[in-house]
Length: 456
View 1 (tube, rainbow, N blue to C red):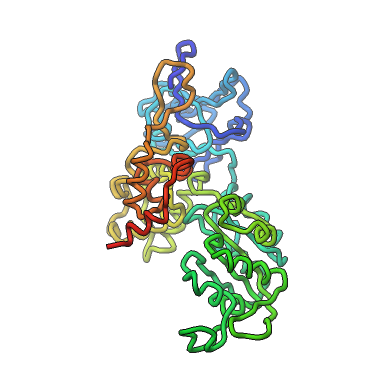
View 2: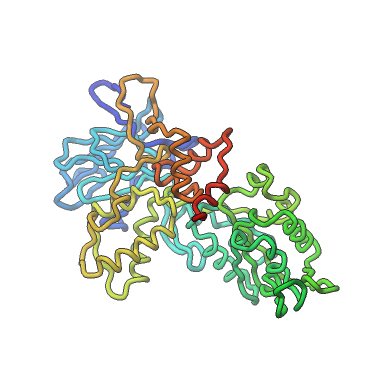
């Protein structure tokens, strides 16, 4: 919305999260020079910082697209926020892709001044290797810090995170630093046939059941001396969860058809897209099993919550996956990358890099026109900082109002997506959390929708 403040018009572009304060905010430059120091926004008090080409500017930025006095950032003492204001610049100030005369800033906002692109963050820090093979800035490093302390222990680990956040990559990094000499075995529990889950996990002897033509050690014994990752562990059938509880308590497995149990030495890591506590509340996971596996719980942040990492990750991936020198990028391209919500997180970014390397291998500079259409559309997520502002004059509307999405539209999107909530949310331009809120109190049978899609 717009709020009258003397002769200044302030646009509510961002959506500040509860507990976010101006004291921790910083504007981190991601393009064109990442070595440029971030702009600390926490100690402005009543003064303002002027950004521009002029040598008297508090923050000097070079380039033809930057005016001598381009923008000013000040503290809005009355509202407890930080505000950026255009100072009559030639190219204007863009916040989350919109030209604005003035806007309040919040974590996740993407700022464009001429050819410069920056991201507002509450956790500025150097991008680097958080764990072996896992790269990110301060947000990711702080999330993974408990794993470094617990790596050498035998504590079970719970990894929570949306699809594509890198749960298996983190599990492999944990295994690499644990000192355990056995292998890491990764199992997708959702893909285990319900009738064979027990046999696949704990092993069986030949002839233990129809089709058991040869013995199998099972995943636990295959991971002896190492680490076993059980992804989507809440999808295990309840009877198997009961037997898993006994395995963890006794440190031994009972293969099907065998008389005696077999001792094991395995470090367990379990993972899932949603909280195991929520799975317990939904009756999908045993509470006593949760008490046994919840040694250290780590929540992997989605990519949209660490937008300052997007371009460094992109640059690293294109250098690793490309066969030659990495192409240059332009500011429009970087702005679009930084603004995208990345519903499938790092996995989606990897696929984008592979797409660009195949379809545009002959270009020397990547431009916005080379991106998929969905990255060029305005962000539609109601919880993302780019939510379209409500310019109504009613001062009670302090936050942008999301476009109304009715339950029938969600059900239609779920049917088209085969019951996949994440894909349906992307189709509607809403978050998964909002989709689940729409379904609350309604008998939406996701399993039936999945079966509808699979039936001829």
